[in-house]
Length: 142
Image 1 (tube, rainbow, N blue to C red):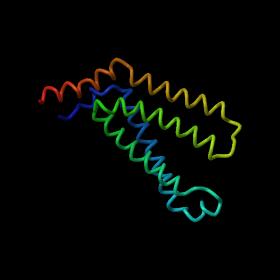
Image 2: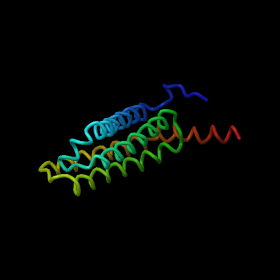
Image 3: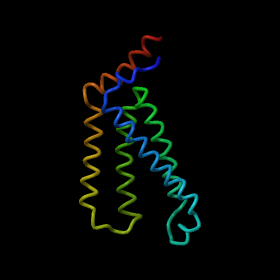
């Protein structure tokens, strides 16, 4: 039933915390879009877009955090999809909705490092064993 924290690989713990912090950041985006709706509209921003995207990434991040923390087998694949989706969303948002920024090489490097870090954790042998246990436990219950 309940997992002992010492059985969770440190990489999974770190990843769950980082995803939770990202979810909190998106929760702040959601709250700020709602709170500053009029001001954002006056300056030509898109508060509805900010609120919806913030809410979606908040919900997805909280769900992923829970799944990673509990060692749910689906969480590993969902984290891969979420990392790819978040990276794609970031770059689509940056390229089409924001003003051009001179720091794009740095942003590409940071995106690549984060994705490599996530892949490294998710494909580590200890992580794969940790998530495989959830599948084995469900089979044993049936």
